Each structure stands twice: as C-alpha cells, then as structure tokens.
Length: 193
Image (cartoon, rainbow, N blue to C red; front, side, top):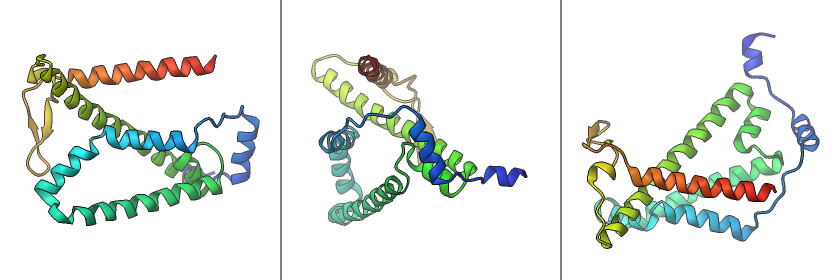
C-alpha cells in the first residue's frame, strides 16, 4: 500500500463500533444539568462578564448585541456538528473518530492534535484570567505580589509583534493549574476505586 493510501485510509463505522463493544464500557455519569454547569463554569471562569464590558466600552459599543448574536449562531452551528458526530458514530473520540471514519488517518491525526492544542491554549487563558482574579483578591487583603511574578514575560504588542514585559513568570497561574490538576487527580483516583 502506498504512503498516500495509508495516510488517508479510513475505518468503517462498523469496525469502530465493534472495537468499542470489545472494550470496557465508559459509564455515562454526567447529566444534562452537570454538563450545563460545566459549560457555564467554563464561560464564567474565562471572564465573560469582564471581557464583554471591555469590548462594549472600547470596540463594539452598542453593536455588541449583534456581535454576541453572530457568535451564538456560530456556536450553535458547532453544537449541531458535534451532535451529528455523536449521532453518526456513537463512540468516544469526538471529532477525531469522525474524521478517522470519513477523511482518513492523517486528517484525524491533525484534528486530534489541533484539539489538544485548543485545550492547552484555552486552559492557559483560563489560568491567566484566574491569576488576575487571585492577584486582585490578594491585593484587596493587603498582600501584593510583585509584577515580575504575576505576569507573563511576553505579551502581544502592536499588530503581530510580541513585547517583553520585564516579568519572569506568572506564579499564581502555575499554582492554580497545579491545584486544579491535583483536584482532578484525586477525583479520578477516588472514582476509580
């Protein structure tokens, strides 16, 4: 088999479902309420209320309503696509499994790594946002963290340029990631026993 045929080889939906049936089943423990809570927590955790005010004041003004409506339509289309994935191939694996069955292994590999990069970038953005909350909260309590230890060493400058901030590392963001990672570890360990 040539390299191109191997890269774009697809698996049938039946073989994917058969593999799932032979594997130990995953328990479905998340309800619609818990999934909604996770979604709302993610949205609030990234600073949707702060960002909305900033965008309204500095960029969109009254057109913010229209911008949010357009974003909601785009999000709705993405949700419909994921619902189609789940209905067509009812196994775990999300967009990776769907693309493996329809577009081939190489495209599935790219999509899988893009999803991993997406989760990494969004987790880092949330950690930086929470870091700002923690620094402000500690400042209200009279505890001041030096700027060099509470900001990223590089930030976006004009256009596509990066600007050095003089900071060393964002310690609160690192501590938040470590704390939440520990909570996830303990939760997984508890649920596995």
